[in-house]
Length: 476
Image (tube, rainbow, N blue to C red; front, side, top):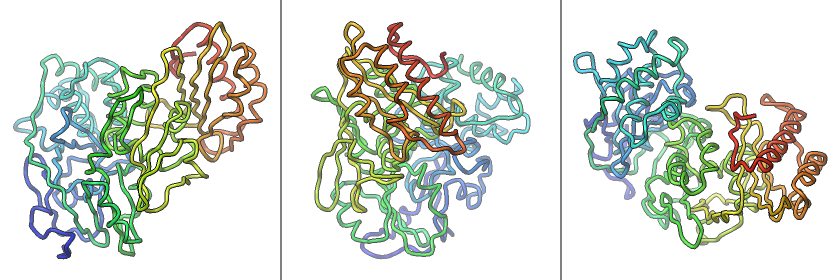
């Protein structure tokens, strides 16, 4: 591997390191932009980390990122992480948890409870299980199922796996992986250069190079961009900019940095707007949520992005930064077309301002998909509503999967205000074709989406009638 000696690079050996299981490992003989998974298996010959789907669905490639400012261990899919993102980071693999001479107690429990047959997926389950055992979460069926939601096993079934973890949980087994001070540097890997700015103003200089991409978590972008690029490519990683990772509450608003991960937001919002928790959990498993960011989810501008409808009905504002400075816009002005938004190439989303709704408002966020965990939406619906004596005084509606952008249904909302809830919901069901125009695709037909949308409004009617604050997508 050739390392540039230009001013923006350090030539010291330490810039080439990733800390694996408490040992400094140099990045050598890497002539292109590869995943952490490939580097572990092919360069370090650590083959306990497996490749299954290579798309973040199966969990066979799970590793832990051990961050010094995080109390919990952070399991991620190593197939979705490029090594340029984790230079100087602390990584724990299955080899760092135990071996045949000194196995981890969870590995012993898997063996005793017959929780592993072919064994291919087992390292990923151990990684996820150990991460849960080392967290501050209560160990129960819900947290176990969530922890393992990104790991697939087709041999034993899940009962012995869950039993194995519960057996170990009784003894409060934790690990304290060796941790080195993180040292993140710019690095060149073949045709790809990774930059790791620590302040937002550094972006003005870095974006002078026309051939660049911003990278936050990378769970979407890393699947799209090729491993080997024909042209010089500059990746500007945003993960080291502290301003983008902050969460602040003031003036009855939440200021949410764009690089805050889905998992961090989930933990933060749980006691403030619990209605959001379930839909955040359905973004994907903890392996995905620990890497994916709020800003990344919005900037992909997918019509089925789960977070956009939520932020639309909460009337959120977006703060943007670029070479021309900063500006703030309402989120309803952000999306411009299929996977298109108003951001110019040099601009990034810095933060999201989320007004905290009044206690008299009720929030409903629903997502329909072909399976509960690890699946993208067929449709989603978000509603922020205030009623008085069964009359709608205030309502905001937004939807995903019914147009080429996340849809703010302002026109429908205005027609429902000051009407009896039953009358207003009937209006929405009868006239829904005036407001949505879904397509047919592999996830569902246009007719299915329309009928499902009507069904969600019937669910809203039941929730309001029974004075239910929220209703799980699994309840009918």
